[in-house]
Each structure stands twice: as structure tokens, then as C-alpha cells.
Length: 315
Image (cartoon, rainbow, N blue to C red):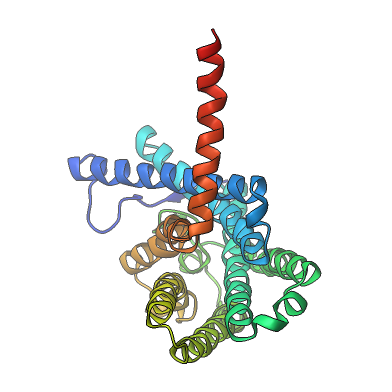
């Protein structure tokens, strides 16, 4: 059985137009950038002992999630564009839904854990070694993966068991539950309520905790005597909240609305934010603006340069 995907070009674009080629070239460049950035972050955290802290441990899991997430969607988009084929097998669609929901749910919980880490580090620095010890970090990371996976199994199984009507054309650039529900021949109201409950657990609760954490951080920061420290901390918090809002905002808007309020163009454009753009911005905001990461990168480049240059000089 095959499920036909609608044109993967957003808005009104024709797959044969020049603008479509530019768009997909841009998407492919973003994909390469995202995979490269997040791979570099993971390697730096593994190799540099200064980055063996709870914050970077959680960040390494976030980077791995981002690599998997964008790799689950963009290669298929680009392949379809180049080949002209817009079909995906039922099993392939199911796997795409499962992996996407696992990573989206896991990342929601992980971002909340990261905000808690920053809250403890800034607001309760003396208790940080106790509240954020190795065991707590491992539980946070594994819990994010496990809970996200369990939630995904349930939703994937339910979404795929609904019978489809005559048309199996999904008006989206990848298999996503809200777009698939539009094809169902049966009443999905009860299942939509289940999605709403999951949205409360994975979206609204973590987002509220993140906002509360950063409010407490800002209150603590404004009590600092150093104006430079206040300015730096405020800048960091602002960038973090910008990325968090860009991820949670479209995600909440997509998954917590009734099926009747969804429009294909809107769903596609919103999905771009939490499936493609956020994985690109996360390493820049959380890592490459950090002095420790930049220093670790310099050291790695030096080691790599001398490892290549010195043997050549010896020859």
C-alpha cells in the first residue's frame, strides 16, 4: 500500500519552477549545516574534559536528537524533489511518524531539563553539585528518550489504524499526524482529545516550566551588582527564550487545535520551524556563543592542524 504525498513545495510553488530549485537548495544547505554543527558539538563534548558538565551532557543529547530529526525529513524531501516521486510506503510513513513524535516529545522534555539546569546553576549555585549530579542528569536524559518513545508508540499505533478514505494524498511535506487525520473516514474526536492531553504534558507543562525558570533567572540576574554580568546574562536568556518560543509556539499551534481548524499551507509553514529551523539554531544559541565551546573548538582545530601539518613537514 502506498501513501501519496502532496507537492513538498510550500505555499503555491510549482515543483518545476526556478524558485522551487532555489528553495530546495536552501533546505539542503540548512540540512548539511545542521548535521555538521550538531556533530561538531557532540565531538567537542566527548573530547574536551572541560565540557564534561551536566549542561553539556544534556546538550549532547539535544544535538543528537536534532541530527536524527532533520535527517528523518529533509533527505526524503530532497530525494522526492530530484526524482519527481512523491510516494512513501505505509511502513515508511509509520516510521517517519514514530521517529518524529519520539524526537519532538523527547526534545520538549529535554529543553525543560536544560532550563532547570540553568535555573539551579544561577539561582542556587551552592546546591548545584547536589541537585544536578551525574545520576540526575542520566535520569533526565534517559527519561526524555523513554517517555518520548512510549508516547510516540501509542500515537503512531492509533494514527495508523484509522481507515483512510478514497484519497491517500497527504497535503504535507512529511507524514505528520494532524495531516493524516484529515484522510480518516471515521470520527477521530476521541483520539484528538488524546493528542490534546499529550500536548498538555509535552508542550504546555514543559514550556511553562521553562518560562518560570528563566523568569527566576532574570530576577536573580537583575540583583547582580555587575552591569556587565547583567547584560551578558540577559542577552543569553533572551536568545534561549527566542529559540524555545520558535520551537514550542508553532508546535503548540499545530498539535493543540481541532482538526477542522488546520489548513495545509499553514501546517507546512509552521512545521518548518520545529522540524528544520530550530535544529539549525540550537547549536548556535546554546553552544557556539559560549566561550568554553569556542575554546574547545580552537584546541581541536590546533590538534587537527598539527596532526596533519607536522607529518608533512617531516616528509
